Amino acid sequence: MREKCRIILDEEEFAVSSIVIANPLLNKILEKGESTRAWIGRKYDGIYIGFRKAEMKKLEKLALEKFGTRPLKKLEKPPLRIKH
Image (cartoon, rainbow, N blue to C red):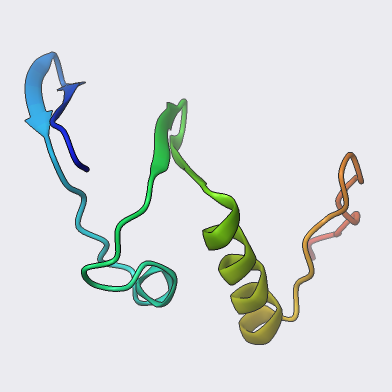
């Protein structure tokens, strides 16, 4: 982050200027020292990270190579999977 951003966590306020990526797969997308922007939001059961187009292309390529998963087309419903 180029500027400090104010966040509130457990009713306590912090100023954040960077994020440490500890996931080895995400580290392949966001290399050390590389600058980008991402949106981080809170959901009921976790968080979400919104990436820019350049990072999305890398994520899609990684998902295909690592997991054999292709991105869904716009408004396409995900395939139905039945768990046993």
